[in-house]
Image (cartoon, rainbow, N blue to C red; front, side, top):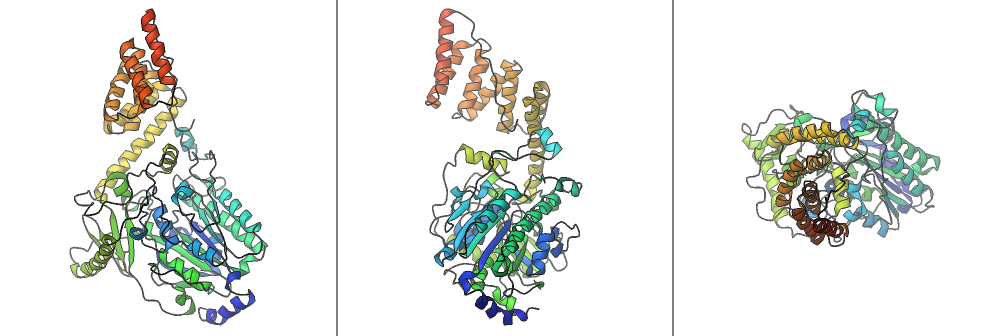
Length: 590
């Protein structure tokens, strides 16, 4: 079947009037495991649309991401550079203008360029907009919650953080439909398989106890709608379609609930499918090792455009013509643990049979015999481990020779911070410091169990927040005290408990909490304000006045604090009682 592509290739370009008439549709599905697709062996029957795309195209069964984390991975796809080269290694970093994106190459060649994204991780501020004439990152104010347990806990999937696949498909199809006859390059990003898993009906009940599968099935349906739109206009006959995941999902394997900490197969092995009539062999499977960064030069080669110099990816289109491409060992890095929690990052080098993982405790797996990566052979196969370690060392040498670029937004602002937190991302830095920033950092393998325990406590705190919203103050206080007994360092939980104690009129208890908080975080005006309420409502007016004056200095644009301080002073002069009617916003989704 592969050989026929050699004969049909010139016919494809001839009948469409040259390479500029070949549209390119890049579909990126967030957090999509390859083994949940029927074309990759799944028996769930959840992905007929993607399976049909593979049936009329070529599926790569050994494709791997360069980062199991959304923004670094998609930045690598769009630049064909390793993360340490483009230096976008977490989800609050901007791509520098000096790098050339795939969209810029297409726009320079006369293509109409567009993108529709499903997550705030990719919003315009991240600067992936380079080369896109149209970039749709409009997120709804709120998403309907379907999961009963999520509703009970008060979980919100909104906060302008993401949008459903149906909205993404609608925006993408409208752009294609209304764009006229000019050739286009469009990137469509679906976020739904990402946690929290909350598929809409009927996918919420179609896969009992497998909400992730429901999200995959729902996303597949929406991809099918987009592909049907192409067929309705006859665009499927002259559109090159590439489908890839930015990364997979652990789903509990190796002790990781989701992704970003480790570089094991469930999160780094990604589906990759190419389809175009007469240009890509139909129903073919390629077993050669390929990387996400290889998509960039491969797509350009297929439409006869030249990639920029100096990229890291390799054009693998010769594989589609029965040729051979020299296999490049796959480099992948996982930095979420480092940026969010100060753990040592993990990096890997993978060949067809072996994988070496660089961590405080090094790992080596013979994937041919141990695809589940359960038997660490590093101590017994130092010969093979040394070979792969040497390849990694070359990457590290390249990294040390790269000049840092201005990639960080600095203070991303409260709104953006809330959006990233709503998606489960907590970032503390940008590009690692030079030198050896990872020396003596804890191994993620040791820390992830503690992390999971802390996540349970976070979910309990969310449940407590919902109880506070509903007026069940004593129950909420009980849960918050239980959480803090195990994890006293959780500032947000301490603040929430202090607010709840104020509502319960336990002002002395609230005072103790907020005194500790203002000492630990002297610039956070909300804690001073709550301390002032606790003092006022115990009759400690003179102390409260000083605190509210401090609030006025910390927040000079907010007139409330000065007014409260003046009212308290007047009450002291008149010798009358002073009490603040405290009605807090407990945050979260009401």
